[in-house]
Image 1 (cartoon, rainbow, N blue to C red):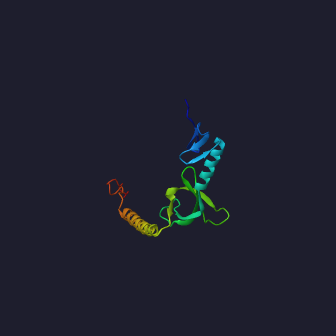
Image 2: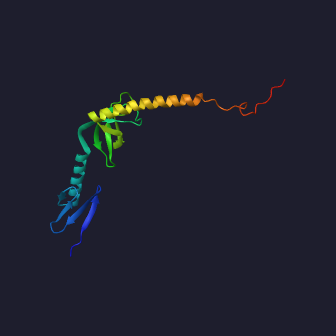
Image 3: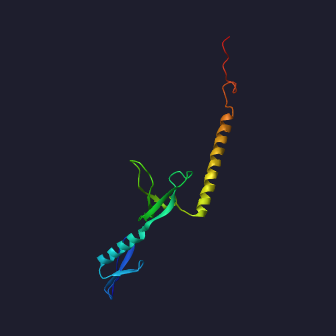
Length: 156
């Protein structure tokens, strides 16, 4: 009777096969004679898959989606599903890297360039409509004590 020996490393299940005397990670299709060697192989595989070569050019939307996106390089993925970016900031206190969620970056394509242009035009219209609304709202006369019939008579 054989019992199944399992453990976990970096979110992947590792199983030991007594018949073959080998440790396996089926999800990554990796195996090794020792558990420590298999863990090393998993770490190596994860490090290779996280790196994005010499970087992938993307557009980065900072916290203001109305502004023009910045062209940067995505350099690697994090364990929590975010991406490291190499920034183009200049100056003494400029950041050179930042970690952001995937929804803050956009692939550089002709279709996305067109959609971003439409978004920016719509943003200008939105700002113009907001300014017109604010002006119209401010133009509405407000109630006064006199209009409410509560004005005090002036001393004669």
